[in-house]
Amino acid sequence: MSLIIALSIVGAVFAGLIVYLAVDAVKEAVERVTTVNVEEPPPPPPPPDEPPPPEQPENTSPPPPVTPPQQLNLALNPPPVETQREIPPPTRTDTRPTVQQAPPGPPPAAKGPSKARGVQPKNQRSWSARIQEDYPRRAAQEEIEGTVSVRCTVTPDGRATGCAVTSSSGSDILDGAATKAVERYARFDPALNDEGTPISASWSTRITYKLN
Image 1 (spheres, rainbow, N blue to C red):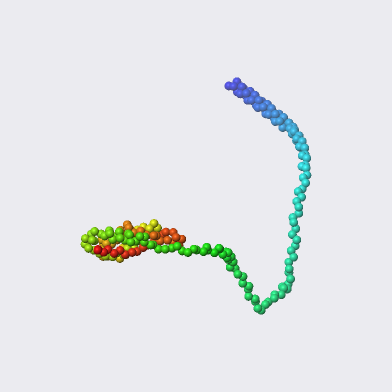
Image 2 (image 1 turned 90 degrees about the vertical axis):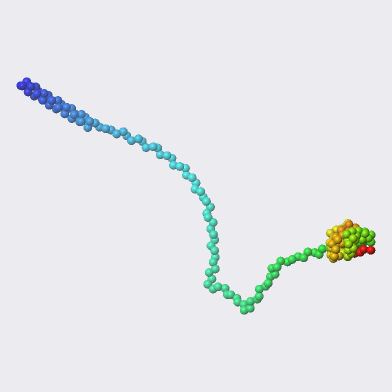
């Protein structure tokens, strides 16, 4: 037991010595660190000054136009006004457009004598006799007689066309035979106009059917 106690005391002393030495070493290190002089590097030299820009000539613009002052009539007394008792009537101006008359044209050419004429039967005795000879057979058998009035159109070539009954004989047989006979046998000199040109015109006649 005494040996253990002795060793414990020696160990404690040795540990205290080690601690003391360690504290001294730390103090020296701290003193060394705190006594170091730190020198800052000198600042860099300033950059050289840039040369000033060249002076540019100022733009000289022409001065603005100056308007001359206007003279105002500031007369206090206005000019006298002349009055007239009788106002003359306004003059009338004719605003209607003027119409220029065209020069008269040449006088119409003088017309010669008119050559106009009406329809004229051509060889009427000849074709009238043929109409009488072409007596309707049925009317002759029944001894029917009568007078038929017809009207037709005569063409420029002298032929009759479009015959129609204007006054009946009382017999359809005689009326039909008369219109057909005129268109078949009748011949004409056609009507003429003022210049003598043949034209169409109407013509009327009466045909009498009579048994011998």
